[in-house]
Length: 169
Image (cartoon, rainbow, N blue to C red; front, top):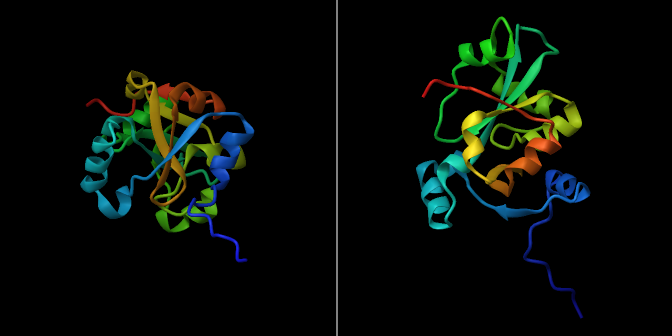
């Protein structure tokens, strides 16, 4: 008799990291890259506030090839690079080269996650202070269109994250 194929997707490496650290999470899908606002509408239908779904921005500081930082903020907010540089005491910060993200972080654009980037690469992780309003947040699970929803404090603690102001709005 043939074995039934499991309909459940294989866990990502980042979900395995959460399991290893005994952090509870829920697998969710928000395909922001391909669906944009429709993904936010889908999240709203699931009872998930758009402000609690985070994007992971990889930046390079002071044009130093070894000075990368990660900032996580809501999908619906923008980042002020000058303010972030000021908050972190850097001369300047700019977005990391999207074409080279896989070499920098190990993830393709749209799949970057603070979980794996911090655990594997050791890059410091900063969170927009506005996410303190949410007990639960969502971040990429390391695969485009796949996210994990977990306790904010669990994630911030896991990646030794710090809160900063990322924009004036």
